[in-house]
Image 1 (cartoon, rainbow, N blue to C red):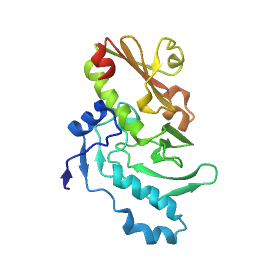
Image 2 (image 1 turned 180 degrees about the vertical axis):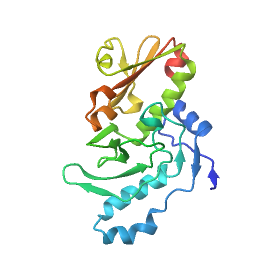
Image 3 (image 1 turned 120 degrees about the vertical axis):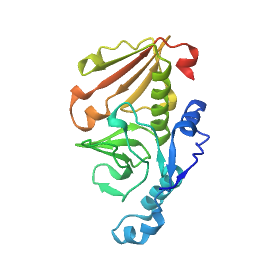
Image 4 (image 1 turned 135 degrees about the horizontal axis):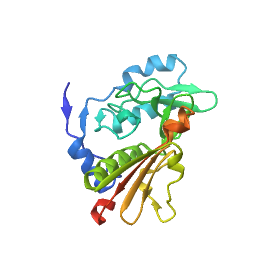
Length: 215
């Protein structure tokens, strides 16, 4: 398997661009065009094939280090055959699971990055948001003096009134919050897609200085 240098998109923050260039690998992406005729024959609209092809060009073959939740996230970002849900519209796989998890990582009808289990749950409104979240988790875990994990109902008890949302992660079901010396990552996507409230999880990264908070 040939490996390529990663040229991170300029739209990412400096922190995420460094993370991708220093810690990610890239293999040859899926060539969506070789499947175009067959997919059209299956009734998949050309616009949806174009979406998968654009994703493959931008993110295809990218292998990020494991995320701290969802058992690490996709192993390698690559699309698969677009599928349609009557209620949710068209979506396609974002990349195969790294480990055995009861859901699929997918790109939603508006370009959201999410998971599909018992239901479709968008985690971030963009793929960049997912990449930023993984990068921020790596950064925070490197610089935090303590890391605390809470689950289930304890997530609801977190006091975040003095915190501000971290915008670059484009959070939907999953969000990041920045306080005076802490970062808090809240993961509710797994709980929502499997209808399992006990799976709500948060990580609190404490003891951060200015560099640790922002990078």
